[in-house]
Image (cartoon, rainbow, N blue to C red; front, side):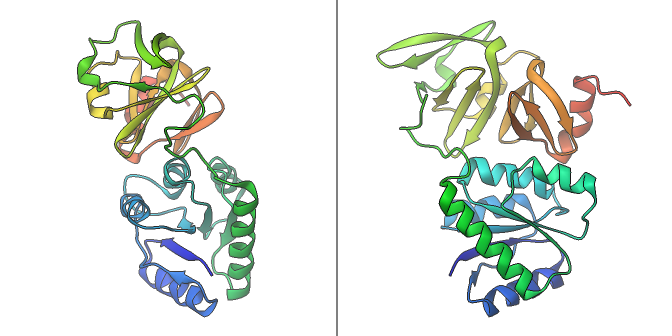
Length: 253
């Protein structure tokens, strides 16, 4: 049976889900009620599945949190929600969850969702990019403090040499534990650095949508309530950044 993390900010509901998982033979971890705690748990111990309420408290809602879980830990997520309207379902799809369970639910419906999610995750392999120095397209740049102020480009190591990356080709930067992954329109690189260091060196078209992501606003193709689309990928947007982001991308209506 599986080790499962519950992310739910309603204590009574979280406790009932915990009991239901135990009845089904799974190992529920102590429930958490926000994305920060969820990511801390995932960084500290193996988790096979996350049950994520969409409307959790904190700076990230459940959809933005699920995007982070997918990107940073490659752990499948099943959404929990009291709403089944089209708008909620369409937003939930952005995080590519392995299931969608409408509250209230029975032990049997929970069992089915969990079994399907675990089976599909096993069949599909990793559900998102995981930091790995053998990752396709991975090259390493030295710490940001070694670099001059970025203007139109930066240089990154590729093989035994270095290649120029135009800032205009950068989609976004993504913090992964002690590294930063750079996503461009063509390939990816890995920095031994931090987003804080990069923020000080990037021009105005770059904006921090979440403490783990800096995006190139010139490449934003669509805005959703808790994410933005860059290329073919959605990047999470925290609640505290939404108003400024809307202003920066000239959102109207």
